[in-house]
Image 1: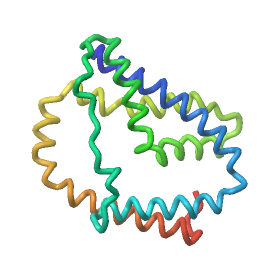
Image 2 (image 1 turned 45 degrees about the vertical axis):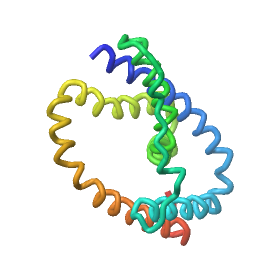
Image 3 (image 1 turned 90 degrees about the vertical axis):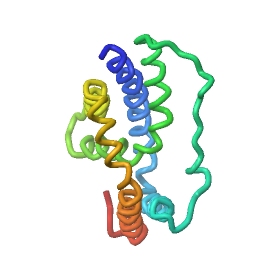
Length: 174
């Protein structure tokens, strides 16, 4: 549990920092909201097509690992891995990670962005803590579920394509 907590602290520091910075940058680009939404829609459509298997983006199929990296199983090692993990995972969580706190900040007066980002990171921590507690049960579940991953990817790709089309057509304004 100590190593799991250190891992979570590592990725939370990165998420909170990048989230706070991205909020400031997002405010600078607010004047280009419509154009950026359409460009983002086109990119989301491409990712959706990739997930459905209609075509593949080779760069997204690469699996880069640091097999030769030797670390310790200490809390400090878990913190460093969590810190590095956040940089690799942030692009995958980008729309969700940036959108939810941003929506809440616009909705409230006197919004405390860093506090909301910390709460968001805490919410992301829950699956990791549960996995640390019940890794055996999780692995049994995953072994049964992995046969459905392709269907899940195709369904997710279809949802991405639909969202991208709405963005491109200007019918979905976050």
